[in-house]
Image (cartoon, rainbow, N blue to C red; front, side):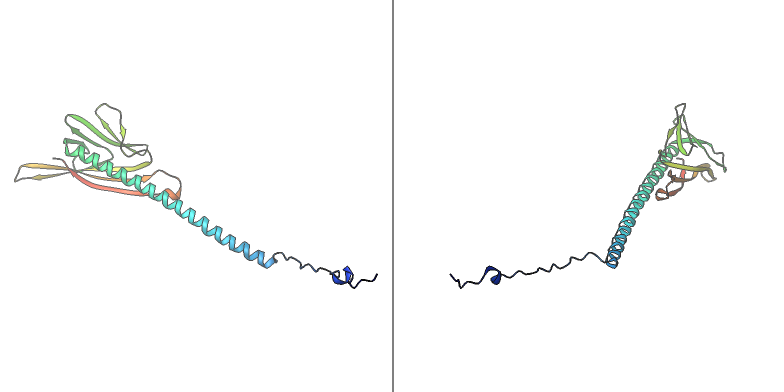
Length: 184
């Protein structure tokens, strides 16, 4: 029996399949991708470092400025209430300030970079804080005699440099305090 049907092989001839070769990256493409990633990493790293440095400087500035404001307020309060200033002597400068407030001796000095306040026989208390150092304060006593009123006005000129205590350049900050306070 003869069949009109073509053979299976005739209807569906074997086809050789040609697979397209899957290409990888060329060396040039790989180098370009690496360069792009490297640039992005450098920019990201630089941004993080800048933000960290800015935060450090901001923190140092804040602490130094706060220490300056507190020291000025504390010294002004003591001098305005003082009945006399013992140290420094008239028209001289000193690294210490000694005044009498309500019969109690108040002493300001610097020890190991800390501005300290000592009231009477009590132990000294740091005024500048632990992260802020004070470099050689200068207290100058000034007096002005008014012959019309037959009175002498005493004032103390204060000059100090405050700096943040850090070895990192990211945290460096220095502030200067200069003021004059009159006794009442």
